[in-house]
Length: 197
Image (cartoon, rainbow, N blue to C red; front, side, top):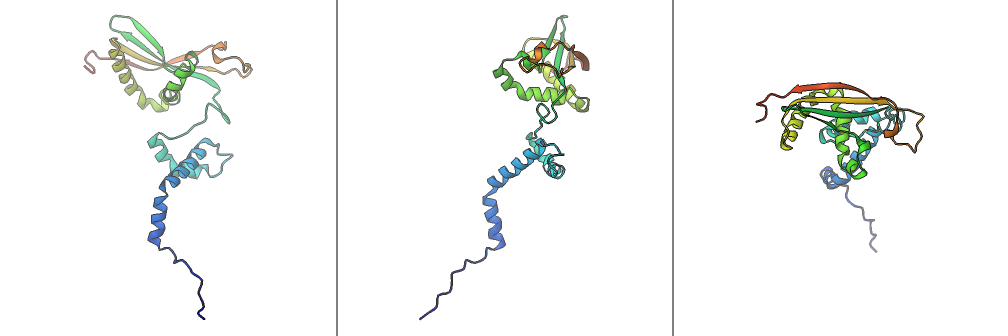
């Protein structure tokens, strides 16, 4: 009587192993992004591998616009109310003021639509470290204003801020705070008559 040897599967060759991994690339991509996003949102004191993960994943996340930040929630929320205003002076002497990131004045649907703009204005445009964005935004604003029939000769970008009052009750909205606002014109551009025409 013949003895049967137990059936053993051949060991996978290295090439087959790589093909198997490549077939699972969506899973690897989602897992990698989840780990990167988790690391970006965690404070370093609670997540020790954060510096290493952020260093490896920071470039792709910034390039693709997939970075995360939690400065409006815990553990370290902002201690000031902030917003950005654009002032336009037209050739005929009229002026127009637009609050670019006044979320309190918007309805919930409009807030949802414009939240990316709020992040752009509040987290980037208003900062001195991001001054490279100021002139391109002023030029963009002039193009949009001209589409609306305006003829701007001066564009001013203004940052507004006020400290949050820690004693405010949860049922009160930010627009009832009595703390005075402070403002600063951080960019001013006199639009040449021939610009963009």
